[in-house]
Image (cartoon, rainbow, N blue to C red; front, side, top):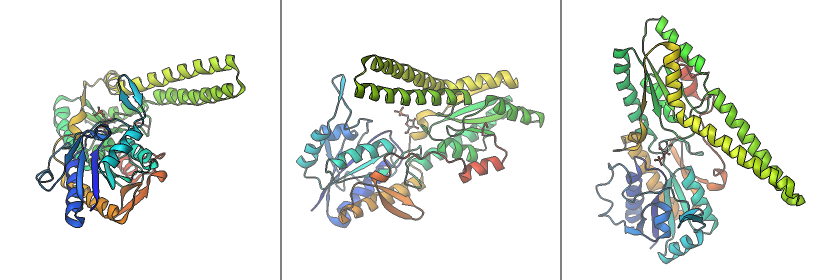
Amino acid sequence: TKIIGVLTSGGDTPGLNAAIRAVGKSAIGDYGMSVIGFRDGFRGLMENRTVRLDSNALSGILTLGGTILGTSRDKPHKMPMGGKTMDMRDAIVEVYHQNNLDALVCLGGRGTMRNAYLLHQKGLNVMTLPKTIDNDIPGTDISFGFDTALTIASEAIDRLHSTAHSHHRIIVVEIMGHGAGWLALGSGIAGGADVILIPEIPYDVNKVAESILQRTYSGKHFSIVAISEGAMSLETAARRQKAKAELAKAKEAKAEAKETDDKEALKKAKAAITRAKMLIAQAEEEISASTQTLTTSLEAMTNLESRVTILGHVQRGGTPSPADRLLATRLGTAATHLIQEGVFGVLVATKGDQIVPIPFEELVDQRNPVSLDHPWIKTARSLGTSLGD
Ligand code: F6P
């Protein structure tokens, strides 16, 4: 009988336990496989910290938030070890064989997929299931966790409406999503936000203020601004893009200087790299501060009292929605069928009604931002919602 390993990696997400349960139940029930859980993501795998996932351990976890296995953001090829980071892939390969694993199922997002890909290149039978509240995994229509977070963020926007209305205020609500705007856009539409700002569309603060003033002129003395944590002003976007271009140029110059053994040019290129990295870090800081910066500007420009609400990790906590339970369960059972068929090195993705395996190679360098012609963008515009552009 086959032995399979399961781990959860990256930020926790509602639905992880439903997926663990589905992988385990199907592996045991359909094929008589044995299932081993590894604690705390790739670190627990490296350290061989295991938990036996028998029927007992899999019972009663469907509705639980978080992950019974624990998680971490550790990467096999850059593992923090005594103040340094080390490539621990060979150690992980050894643990895999020590446990006589036939396959390893990693539940995670884009980072996890890259980690799994690197282990697959070392010859391990690995696959990933798409989990993240950010919905930013390429290749799959949707990831589990997103629906729950969408529900939580939409409900928060609902609740902010009544208090914003009562006090005639602007409330700027910051929504997670990492570098993608799916969660802010989806919950902004579902919650009826008046302005929705996402990373894919850098905003003009004047346009945002203008749209709020228009509401004031029509007798509505309050507004809800849903801002994605990765959203940025036009100015910040321009600075960041320039710094990134400088970094790319400086890296090229460094490579050339090395090739021609030009010491002076190498020194210059290294200095240019340091400078460009500093400018990128500055832009990232501006992005982190942008919810507050925008709120202060809007208060001054509209003369409406303004408040910030950062939803934060509440968006990731608690029991998964029925849609996420269903999705995680479908993906988990599909994973064991693929193991039985010997399909590895893939993301187990959804495409319409179907579940399809997609090779890592096709996905690891891809992203999944909101495209500017996505139907949700069109929907928001049709409603008259300002997207800050
Ligand atoms: O990827 C999920 C996510 O919640 C992002 O939306 C957010 O940017 C990030 O994780 C927060 O990370 P952490 O939980 O490590 O603070």
